Length: 304
Ligand SMILES: Cc1cc2nc3c(=O)[nH]c(=O)nc-3n(C[C@H](O)[C@H](O)[C@H](O)COP(=O)(O)OP(=O)(O)OC[C@H]3O[C@@H](n4cnc5c(N)ncnc54)[C@H](O)[C@@H]3O)c2cc1C
Image (tube, rainbow, N blue to C red; front, side, top):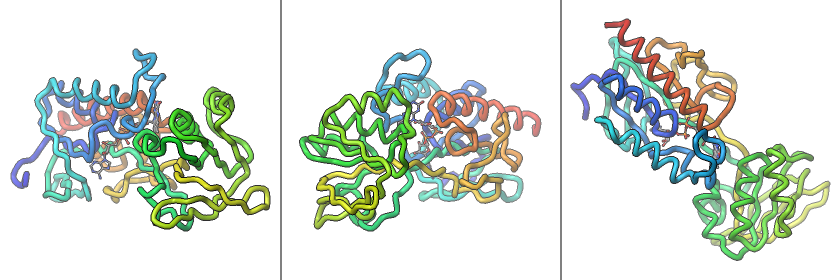
């Protein structure tokens, strides 16, 4: 499986960072391979995007399709395989997937992030049986019922705004006293009579039998039962950086890069949400993907 071929570059991930890196790599006529679990990354989870320059309003699905259409103009090799490990041996990088091993002279890690778990009893038991981490994907399954969203940041509020169009009522549960989301999103949620906002509230347990039946919470010292059929967990995310263990990372596991997307290991570059670059946004990830590809090109040119 790719045993004898040595690529110039392997790009792991095809979100905005990986796709943009691939477009630039193609335009530089690099011999590269993209390994990914999906095309579009977290963009496909976003219902509406209003902050990507050139588009006043676009859905995540549409933007991801546009990214991919752009990339498809070029000749490239993309495989839907999960990268399990990146290693370096005998002067080459090796990316091990669930399907084989691939070698290259340089690598860009653009694996983004995944949702963080709440870590309460019942959460794992009822995953996909009422517990969801993606309102865009699963909201239509909760038509006409009562649901809760846990987490008062931007993704929590975005989930609430999607769910009020579908569910009967939505409880927004936030452990802190204040919501951290952008005021514009909070104002929209407050304007709906179907939304109840509970701040200073801890989730104790998600309960049910075959599916979710409710949630035990602690609100200002009082234990309450919320009879909901859906629980959307939106409490942040964690970087998909475990596949590489020989580069410097920060305390959150984000790969540390400089302004050229170089990691602490020469030839290994990283871009987008998996890195310590502070703003986790589509436009930032795309820009970082561009920088990573151009840096990889420069690195390979110097080596030759
Ligand atoms: C609900 C939601 C709404 C959002 N709304 C907005 C918004 O309105 N505007 C905005 O600017 N940003 C928004 N964001 C943030 C934005 O989506 C991210 O900042 C951006 O997608 C990051 O791009 P990325 O390419 O770094 O990573 P990702 O988009 O996470 O892509 C990572 C890619 O890596 C692949 N991958 C992961 N692990 C592996 C592996 N081991 N092997 C192979 N492939 C792997 C994945 O399949 C995916 O293709 C939103 C995020 C969420 C969750």
